[in-house]
Length: 390
Image 1 (cartoon, rainbow, N blue to C red):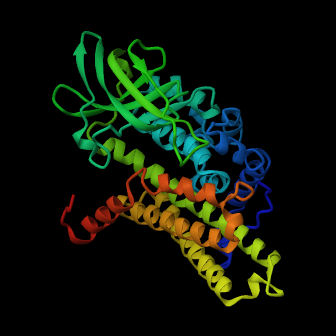
Image 2: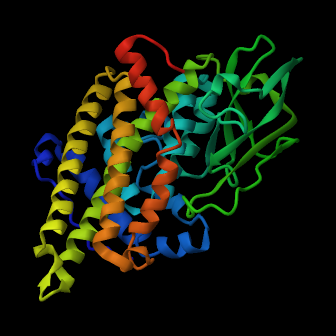
Image 3: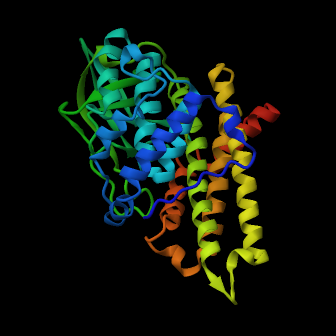
């Protein structure tokens, strides 16, 4: 994949960004162009995760960028986090997933709900990528209804005994720790840090995926796993705790999807200017201009949406429903742009010579995970009407 990316900014949204934001974007963009774009098609075709990128993701600060510096993070704001996810997902949704999971679903709950001992033990190593984590909420029979989970633990002296399973877990095959959500004897949900090597804990990999092929996905299996009680996250229990983590991840996805859309639009625009049919570049044809004009319009709307959401997030004012709106809208926007861009390229659009088809397949996962397309409608509907339709 040749990287000759030009970022669209039709409404001069750069004027809304600080100099630090632009520096972060430029350095992340350069890293993606140098380290991700030249290799990602090969890894996607092989269905293999490029593990050597973990160390580099740590070096560019992509793991927990908003985590305070005292715990190894960069202490950046939420817009900085969003910008990094946008640029990384321009490279590949699977690589962004690795960074999102580490940041929002592993480091975030330890930072927000963990003990001081847990924060000091895990966060600095997670920030560098020396230690990798995953997040265990979804179960084989409980996806959109996580409250129905059956993974559970019982008290046994100074320990707990954990049983159950989780599936569709990004990073699980190589994770050193898993932040797992399970019910206690009173059916109350708690976060538990499960560590690699604990007896009865295994992480089989999921194969034969058509989507997120350059990302490692697997299961988490708990067969009477004995875990010290000090590994329970003490700061918050109940379903609200993992849902707070998902809000942080969904916010990052709303930015990441813009990166995919930008990349597909950029590819389609450049191809249309070079591809000659009937004696003219196809960019001179009305139908192609219609596609490109609509793409740019939707990207511009999404940029403004995520920027404003980032401002709200910085002020701790962003609601779950507002985050749902942005995640749902922006991923749907990116899917439509990927499909239209593929049409612009004709048959060439299905080849690995261009990024579009890989993006399109990846988005089939992104539109489903962290709350499905339909579930986000119901979250918003509940907020609008006060009636829960779940």
